[in-house]
Image 1 (cartoon, rainbow, N blue to C red):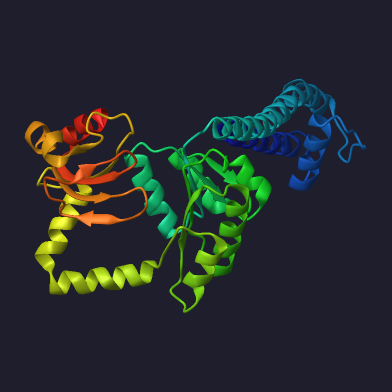
Image 2 (tube, one colour; image 1 turned 180 degrees about the horizontal axis):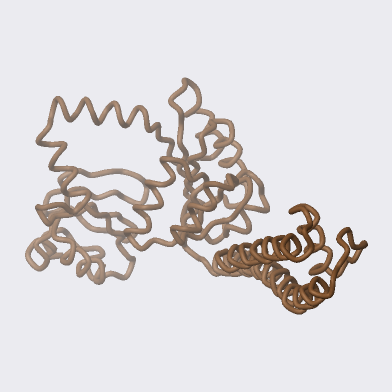
Length: 328
């Protein structure tokens, strides 16, 4: 926008120069001089309000040669900025839709409020693919600045969810501010993809969690309840809370809690924990095993079998966990 501003300033200088020129040469008032300058450089020519002498006519001819060309230049630049801005906006939207259409195994985040911002930041940190659905123009501007993929519209709209790739997504996270909107989003998403994993935000109002679960959510969380519970645990069990924080975020201990999906054809499949040598070869502790049916076994003994479809909750160094992930 700097070029149009500079052009407009120069145009203003020409108008002032022309007005003072007529004032000095013809003794006109500032308003009459400004009027003469404007109708001259705009080639309108409604009629002279100032009687021109020979010097005044020469000045007018110079003003025409300089001013008319400059006015055309100014409007050309303004037009270029407007047209280019619109073209860039159109191209940006088309490019965004193309990138979103190419996504697969991604996450759909509905809403980019305070909770949505934290979720997308963590997803981005973990290099997970995601697209945000938002309808607030100010929020969309922030999404563009962050470089996140996003779609403008209502997340409860079936067409919008289809554009976001709901049929190819790994999961959907509904975190808009209204409980009713979250219910509609969950209903729409579940109807479009019966196998989709859906997580929804609840305000904590009684009965909302049940409605969201009935609508098809796999998991319903209340940020207020979680926050209050965390604060209580930090008072009652500060060391335990600090340890969990460090392992989840990969802090100064260098340890991480991660979950690994066991492949049916993995190297540890159908072996016991002892036979798998996970602790010996990778120095990783298996904290829990979640069976494919949903059963959770905490602190499994060495004789516990690892089955295809299980999810292992492991504790260890991040790099070693990644190596273990490759063989299971």
